[in-house]
Image 1 (cartoon, helix red, strand yellow):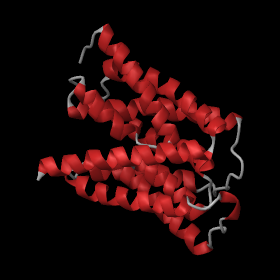
Image 2: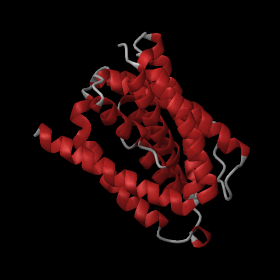
Image 3: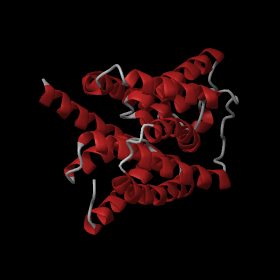
Length: 256
């Protein structure tokens, strides 16, 4: 679809917002898609455009995080990266057989659980939190595989869930979880982008201005994470979690 300069400028601004949210607390897709639809972009085009554009924010955010590693970062085994990539590919295949519109109820439930889990995981100071046990780490790896699959076929609230899993099950601080989550999201997003490009369904006229904004937002979000620290990440995570929950609740009520 063709868009004029005013709409392109507005989408670039929207991309900045999506990029900042994506690399700090997650939720870039959930915020970006409805806002893009308000501009008159069809639903399917909105989903694809936002998913592809957010790849730019994960790329710039990963580069910014790589320049300054967060304190108390927890090492991850090398195989977590191909596992997440394969999980995302599998999730994309599931999408072909499922109707994502029917997933709102499940996503809402998961989001409520994640909000409660985030509160439980972050209410103590990082310095006095006990290290995760082997059972928690194993559960965390399974959770990350499930999240990669989930992101491949739906993905609303994925970033919030990922940060929660890294904090609660792997012993990360919120800021180091945001940094690692950005790099993992880059790997997972790459799988979706590759599938969309292979099938020739990327709406470039919408995606390019949105992606430019997302790239800038990724840099800004990563910088904010490094400068403002854990309290900023906790606040953004809570705000995004509540907004996503309200949006999904309203969508569920409208569908019923």
